[in-house]
Length: 335
Image 1 (tube, rainbow, N blue to C red):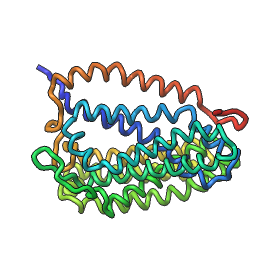
Image 2 (cartoon, rainbow, N blue to C red):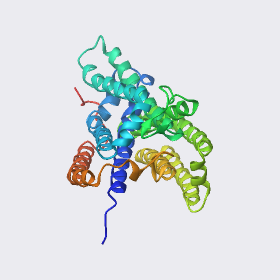
Image 3 (cartoon, rainbow, N blue to C red):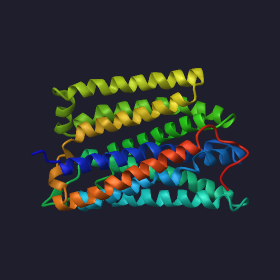
C-alpha cells in the first residue's frame, strides 16, 4: 500500500515557503538597500510606491516558513534557534523598522529623512542577518544529545560574513531589476546602472561562496563532485550563466522584464544548489528530515491546514501582483 512520506512533504513545503519569501521579499529589501543612492523626494517616493502594495504580503511566507518549522520540525527549531538568536533577532528588528518606515515617512516632511534611513538600515540589517544565518547553517550547527552544544558567537565567522554580504548584494540586484521593470525615468535609468554593478558583484560573491563551500565539510565535497549529484554541479552553474546572458540582453535591449526574471532565476538556482547540498539533512551533518520531524499524527493534522492555507496565500499573492502589474504611475501611490 502506498504511504505518503509526510516528513519529506513538509520539508518540501517549508523549503517552498522560504524560497517564496526570498524571491518576493528579496526585491523589496533590495529597494530599501538602494534607497540612499537615489535623490530624496519624488524618486524615493516612486521607489517606495513600487513595492507598497505587496511588501507586507511578501512577508507572509516568512511567517509560514518559521511557524511551519516550529510545528513540524520542533527539534530543528529547538537546536538551530539558540545558535542563531542574534542574527534572527537582528533580522526581525530590521523588518520592524522597515514596516514602521513605510507608514511614518508619509506622515512627516521635516523628519522624513529619519524614516528614509530607517527604511535603508532596516533593509540592510534584515538582508545581512539572513545571509549570516544561512552561512552559519551551511558551516554547521554543533548538536549533542539533541541540544545545541556550540557557543554564543559561533554564527560569526568569515564565511558567514561573506554569505551575509552576498545576500545584501544579491537583494540589491533584485531591487535594481525590479525598479527597472516597474518605474520610469529617471528612476529606471539609475536603477539600470545599479543592475549592471550588482550583477557583477552577485556573480563574484556566488563564485567565491561556491568555491569555498565544498571545503567546509566533506559532505558537501562528496555531494558536489561524486556521481550522480555531480551532474547538478554542472547543470546549475550553466543555468546561472544562461540567466546572466538573459539579464545582459534584457538590459542591453531595454526589455524591462527580462533582467528581473533572470535575477529571480539566479536566486532559484542557487537555492536548488543549497537544497542538493543539504539533502537529506535539514541541519547539515547533524539531523536528517526524518530524525527532526514531529510525530506522524501531528504531520497529518497540520497538512490538512496547509492544503487549505497555501493555495489561498498563492491566490491572493497572484491577484495582488496582477492588480498592480505594469509601471508605477508617478502621480499616484501610497499615502
